[in-house]
Image (cartoon, rainbow, N blue to C red; front, side, top):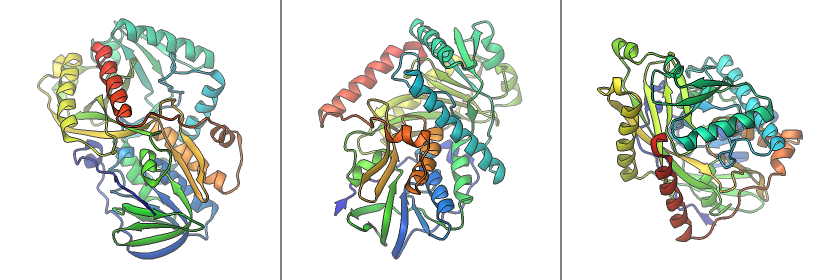
Length: 439
């Protein structure tokens, strides 16, 4: 029996979660249930996998377990960028090998198409917008990244537009940045609203149990998942819980829970909107990975996301949240001095499942155990596509995307503790310091 020592435990301050439509959580699981299929983790990856399994096996019950409420965890805490282009922050041009980048592009486009179709089909109100994204820079180092990124996009023959310093205020309102590279294919959305909407629209043969954290697992010909109020005996187990897969006995120290932090303002008044200027909604990602991500939302709030921490347990730490809030305030006022009187209404953290070599795991882990984990900061698109394709592969399908994922090298190993924490914390501190004004 494998005891699960750490469970998801996020803070209760996520603006996306509280501002999206409230839904009644499904009941926790009780008693003993035997089933053919169980998916652990009802974020975007798990929702996609459960949906696709239900379509392949309409006569089977698919059990989907979520330790917290749907939309409360990492999938509802990101910045809401469904990015189409490869976004390999380990490559100098964000693209890397053109062949692999081309496959990543296909994966992301598949996810975007799925999201747009489901949002339209089920009338999910998640502020979905085809606004694209700006990758912006202010420091010389960031400007050099933009130049390299431009060359990478040329290799892939992808559309972009360079926005000069003088033009940027017409787009973003702020005069802070020196240059930006605009790419039109990114979707912007409200992530918690999307996740909640997808959960409400699951096929009828999916049984979703929320607030049902798994406490231990027995592996064998059949797999038994134990929790506080019962157990589930399943033939096949799909892990779609990112870094928490390690607590189920797999990929130890390979998928790292790196937390990032965001603050969201109150709604801007009409006068404040006029003072800001620019387009009515937009999204900015930093040229430097340690810089600040920004959103202007359709309901006229400003989001600032920066600051990183390594929380090995995968659980939030209140002290990191307080430090991040101070940095958010400084970043906000540097960019929007005309809005210095605007307060933040929400501040929260959320984990990304990062790997050292920027490769996730897709496919088998053990007999009757499979996983799609390690989204490396692209949870909306990567999670949606790999969750769907994992179910397709288990059902016997094969295509070029499945073969690409199965032949990936997978996440690389990391050193044991305490060297792991020392190394990561040093790298995070150095990266945030070197980012300078990009933060």
